[in-house]
Image (cartoon, rainbow over all chains, first blue to last red; front, side, top):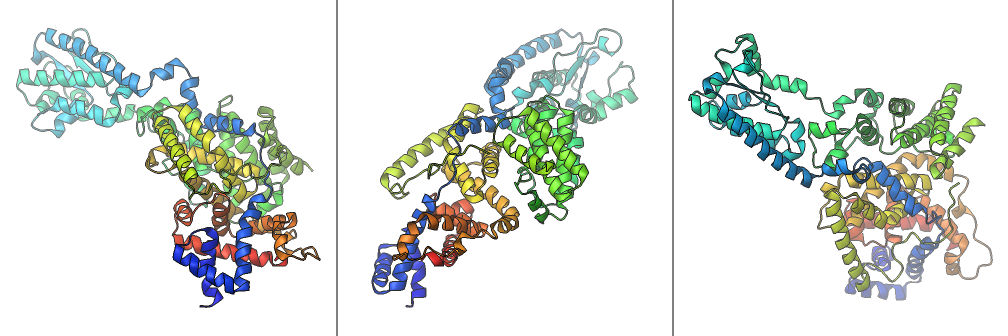
Length: 412
Length: 215
């Protein structure tokens, strides 16, 4: 075997990854070969020399600040729960489950009693957004109410948490149809879906009519034609119209500022849909829930969205000329410009938001990068303004120092 | 500028002799993994304090990897933050049976590679004209190997490492600084062990070539 053949083995020996047999072979060769022996010494000396190479280390304080920064960025989720106090603590999954169960029992009892008090089943109509659909799906009418129940649970994995925004179920008596009082079953929520489903089953059993019939024809009810049809055939449509879209679709303005080109550009796409409230929702076990997304503030949603879209800000370099060498993206200037626009939009839209400092920092970096790409007087002026606006918010720290230095370069 | 200290190797998690193969290190690691597992479970359950504890426990390692790869505090700072943000948002995907540190390292390394790939051209430009490896070794040094431990050599090595392609640099740094085994590097980078070995081999060959004046 030649020395070249032994090289991989010598590498493995230096790395301590050889078997006993390999070790014997390698060592035997090293004893006889001066070149390989010198190479082996080089390999052994390399790690030690590399480790001894001085590496600037941040001060101890940094290790205390960094977790806070990270938790602050996670902010609205983790730290938020503690910071925002009792109200959000009440929204913890375990508490909500207990509250939901209690409320369900209470409402079921009340509604059940009221249903029993109703004069005659045939004079009572039942209007709900979900029951008709359940009934339509089950032409035999079997378990229509149960369908509602299940639907409530399926829609939200933690239905008890989303109780306040579940489909509303309204029981109507004869009076409610125009001749008397209208009786709302109470608050929105799963409890009502459950109660409604139960009442619906009772009602159907009492009348002996199939579900569809009950829903489509309500004797004595005014507006029987068009109104009844609207009520019975399109409740889901109505519900859909009432339910706001996911935050990702709620935030077109800021999103659109950076959306157009970035999706196809070199920067990595968000690993998850850019639902602004995703992280918040996740922590509250409300993922994929519109209700959960709705519970996140627009500012938080947009902030999360932008962080997802621009995971690593344009690098701030001491040498701004280097920015012009960025060829990773077909039109880097345009991409950076859209990012700047997105952060600027956020800053202007949510003044005083808890993420304002971070947003202004990102804006400042983008803006400074843009100067390297478009070294016009206008971009320079804008970068100085954006950078200054960040420094007004966060005058201390490494980031501020870096921005300050970059602005000095621009200002020269 | 950031008031950096000048301590050496303080970012290292392990010291020589505490390699992954040693029983003491293995026991410590097992204990640490148990603690991590508990923290992950609590963090998933909505305890922000648990995640903060994870950050505090792993921040030096993550930052150290990022800094060694990028050589810039600002970038390492960004990468560290981003690593934990991503870890947080994907905590549900983490397999509890596996150690947390390699998972975090993988995120950080990938972010750093993304950065380096984008900045490779720029860094290459920066490196031009300041090639300590090209500087002749001090004359009259009788023992070539003594040069390996000289301050000058260390500076040259540092500069030479920065000139390695990002993939090779990553493998080299994980091997040298994190003292990872081939298998662990392969897992972190999601490449085969053969690729790890070949990258490491090429990295060392290049370093040897760049540092030939010191040998």
